[in-house]
Amino acid sequence: MGLAASQGRLLLLTARKSDLEYRAQEISQRRLILATELETVSSKYARATANRQMKLTRQVKMGEANQTQTVNLTYRNLIEYGMNDDGTGTSIYRIKNSRGQVVVSDSSELPKTAADAGYSGSNGINVKVEGNRAIVSGTDKNNNEVYVEYVVDSKISDASDTENYFQEGLRNGRFIIEQLTSLDPTGNQNLGTNGEAATEWSAVGWSGMSEIQDNYYTDDDATAQAEYQSASARVQAQDKKLETDQKQIETQHKAVETEFESVQKVIQSNIENSFKMFS
Image (cartoon, rainbow, N blue to C red; front, side, top):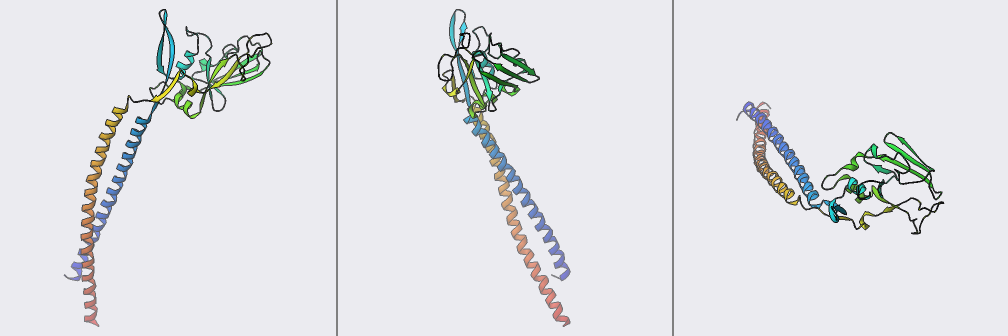
């Protein structure tokens, strides 16, 4: 093979090498994307099989008799559970966030009067509403200083079947349930100056409330497993094909490199012979 022909062959082999290396990089990138997709599918499946659901068991009046009813624990269900049997009056439950603010789901739930805030008959309690915020302040029946801030968090009204915003907040401590009681923290009757029970709100742990149960939610497990198996099989099939293509490219690249080195040697030999001829 002449010098010119060898040089032309070398250029073709160089282009071929570059093309194969580019294709190998492209396949590696596609396999990396598939690995990320498989990780996402696996994480989704793990979440679906590990999710939990809080239930609220309550007594409801059906005709002349009371019956036990179990419902999904939502902010609205808990608040209504704490009201009178006919759904009226101030709920004995309220929700506080980790900043100590009382949380409601809508501005219409903000207290307008002391009675709305659970301080019935307390003339020394003032309520100031500003947009999505309300301040309850003053002195209660027992001459205790009161300062409570109410804020609106519309996401707390989430009523999805599982892992809703309210339930998640209870589990991680972002939300705390408080109960209206006439007892002080020591358990003694807390009477106001007029002999009536003064208003007290006490934090209660949801895990200690017999009305609330927190169990694994399994209704979606079969669907999640089917989706995972289908997605996993598809990703693995695509990855297997790309792996085969990658091995073929590696084999071709090795053959091109071998020929490339052979042509380089031919060119080097031609150059050395030419210099000897003219020396």
